[in-house]
Image (cartoon, rainbow, N blue to C red):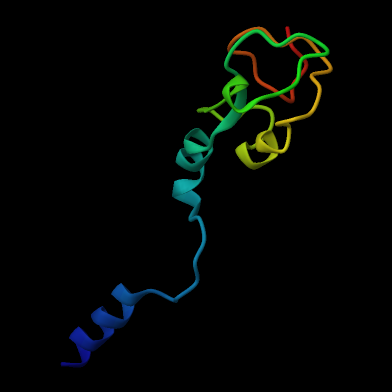
Length: 88
């Protein structure tokens, strides 16, 4: 009986939530970044349809990308370019 009680306690874990070491690489690949959904030229105004949130995470995180809507574009971003990193 004691053995199975110990097994049950082990299966319940320690109650601490977080990313384990073996999950770190998968977590990085699963995160999304903000990308240009179409050509964006300096002076344009970011709209909802101008941004795409794709994997892998490069540049701005999606919540940061949403804050761009309504603001003016400062650099040229070709379609598919990561927003928040200097365009190539």
